[in-house]
Image 1 (cartoon, rainbow, N blue to C red):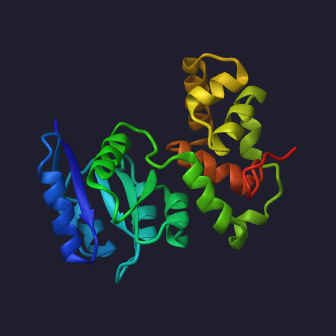
Image 2 (cartoon, rainbow, N blue to C red):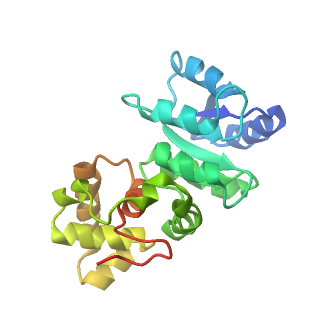
Length: 225
């Protein structure tokens, strides 16, 4: 079954380019397009979509608020934020709104296709280190970064789960975490799954965001406490 993709961007030329790339893939299909957030929300009410490629700077309703509204729905499609600049404050807000990751608009086609497939399979599509770099720059500018290091949500985690969460937030992949903690990679994957479930998070990107918001990890990538 093909991955059903929706393109949301106010630039028709960019949508055309993305559509041509996706149309050449046997496992992907562009089922909808929209030029702004308002139109996107309307189209989604009548169209089944698996992955949304979302621009952030659009008229009427920007990509961040559109992402927030989409991700608040039950059985929402996954959202992949598209940004013009590598370090974009909109991308940070998009991650907080529930996006599964972000990509640059000038990303090579092969990377874009891989990202769509990863999102569809339930993974985050940006390297944790890239997400951390984005957070390092913008988290001090947001009110949420002033919270106390502890947060009631973290009390749901076991000591081992907190340890795994800190390493996820510091940019380590499952294999690296397994080596650090002398665990099997399957065990680490189980811990990550429990962290997502207990904290009501969608993916690893959201783990990183929460770790910064709660002070579990501080700008610069270091763990607290």
